[in-house]
Length: 277
Image (tube, rainbow, N blue to C red; front, side, top):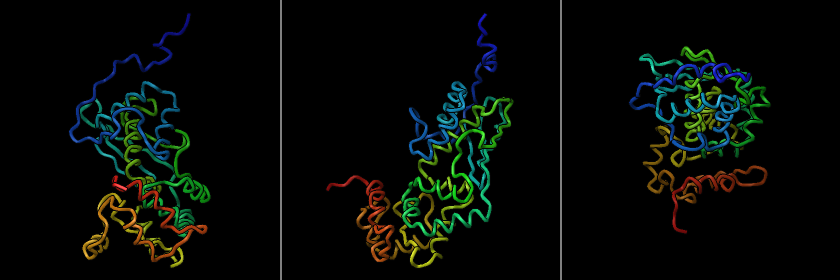
């Protein structure tokens, strides 16, 4: 006699629990279709989908979309979150990836300081493929390739991993990465400001002078605000690409024979609002 679904998928014995509603939860921006847009964000969704727990992942997507993830904090090597389930006390979720040592970060930073085009792409809101190679050359992964690369835990009573709460957290993280790829480097141990400070202290031949306001998410640094106030012709957020790139003209910085301003122009054009040509 063929095995029943009771035994082949034992957790289906219990009815689906109804989570308690959450006010101001971290609902994903994508309410239908794929949970992630860019390749670096899709990696997390692919890792979950490859685990083969279709119904469990469906519940995780539902939790992520309706805002059951209450908080999500990203630190070096750690994603910590609270997820509201069916019980009054939220579940605590942690997701860890191998931490990057100081020596490994020194090698990564040296490589970044010599690749102006790569960092310019990061500043424009992209994660270039070559960043994978930079981290791999230092002996650490930038992204997980499979579920076993992660050390994840949840305080819920579900013994299986990933549970729907873990799935919800990673789906929310992937959604946030679509909007702010610097969260990925923050998870690996360096903030956006730390990377930019590194470039400011690099050799003049490799340092990048990049404007903040067209693309940097979050609060602008004081010096950027001061510069914007003192420069009447400074471009607004998402403004004209040509006006923004004029700020890079004096550097005459080149990468493999191509001017950096020309290399990142497509990124500015994509971020700028539609204008009449």
